[in-house]
Image (tube, rainbow, N blue to C red):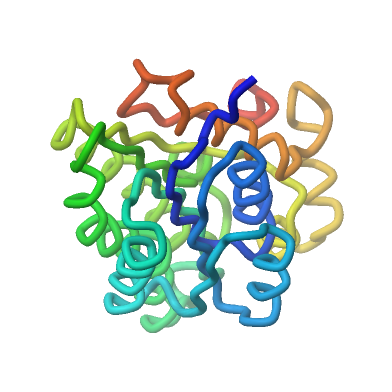
Length: 250
């Protein structure tokens, strides 16, 4: 069977850990040519050694110029751009009163503004040829609120709105969708749990609250990501797809 992403050039942000890393690994397995983004140079270099032929560019997605450099790298190395897989994110923990103005802005820059920045530079290239895909890693926090996560929840809600707007704007040449994961077993869930009085209990309670009685895995998310950027989902756009073990139904 031919790889689902054969010769597709993909930018994957947040690629050095958690869900982003799993997505990069699955895209590579399916024939994708990858430009990998992350802040940790050492982990990025290790990843490029694992995913032969990929290119890593370290930097902060909250910076406009860095997003432009990711697109330029794709065009310089591979001559085309087909897929954006946007996974970088931070939590910005603290209630509205205690949260610093700096943390609020930093969270929105990383989780929301970065999506606008890279899309702005990438869309002209995605419109070339047969079109392309933008897949945003959002969160069930777009629909469900959590204590001490105001910046995170606000950014994820806005992310889904931006996704829907871009889907309308650029159809049918570009499909734009979002994945909205629930509790996935990555370092982020443990960072998030620190906002609760008993972090370990919070994670365990999240697991028990799912209908499947388990945390998600990065691989669960990566398999859905491959589907949504491949031709298997060619009639899906403007969709925020929850992948949460059924937790929103409890």
